[in-house]
Image (cartoon, rainbow, N blue to C red):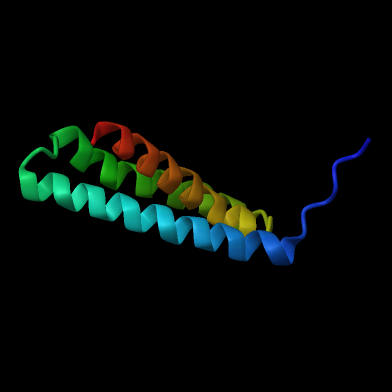
Length: 90
């Protein structure tokens, strides 16, 4: 049995919603860590490095003409992973 094709009109708004929620959670948790003085140097470096890596992958997807969802995917994956990782630290 074949998997149903993903509807592109549905996928992009869903990805944007996931990115928004995960980003808000990550920003909140990192801000609390900074306010409490528990934010490590590794966390500060991770903040910059992950964005640079996501931009690089996103740019490659854009140049390959893969579509909006492929361009947004690196940011969604990283934001959701960060939210999950920081949730465990709390």
